[in-house]
Length: 236
Figure 1: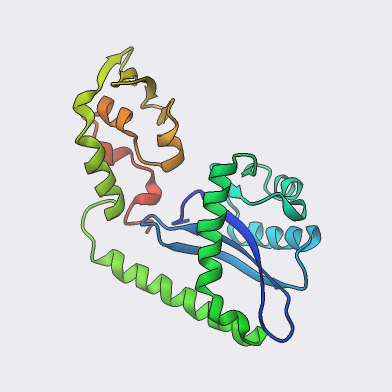
Figure 2: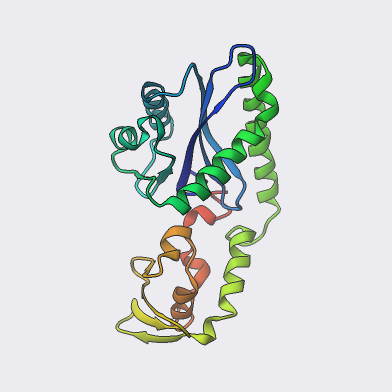
């Protein structure tokens, strides 16, 4: 899928005559735009309705290893997610990360559909469907105008970190492993596993400044070549 590996799960109250709850699963696209994955209208937010919603999401999208669901601890999600998605991470204990992702991704979706929430259910669902369709087309048109291999936001980030790589000393142990020493701390980088002990590379999908410093000293390697494929224009 052309979205980030972090998926926010949330429920919001409807404002129409019949009330109810809209459950949603939302991520970000490679250029930090909203990427709605799924939504459903249910009578109430409960363990039963979340189980049904996640089972439908699993059937429709599958989800592969590397995805992480973010939510609060309400409605039994802490135990439901592992049952439906045994190979997908579910995070509630990392409070600052959970707060950021749940609020900024899920609440952005809630705000995006805010006007539709007052409509009768059938009209509301169709309105949201149209909005998603229009958003996907806008993304396609925007992506067709870009040049290169990866999205502009990733290019900009890589340009910013490569300005600072001269400050780092790289101590290689072999072709793919090195200790990178900066002004205040040191990290371990593994190019073959695409990891750094700072963990920024694993979380963002783009090599961190420590990895970039190592890569710049390896012949035949380019930072852009090992950016996560979800940042590619093809996936976008």
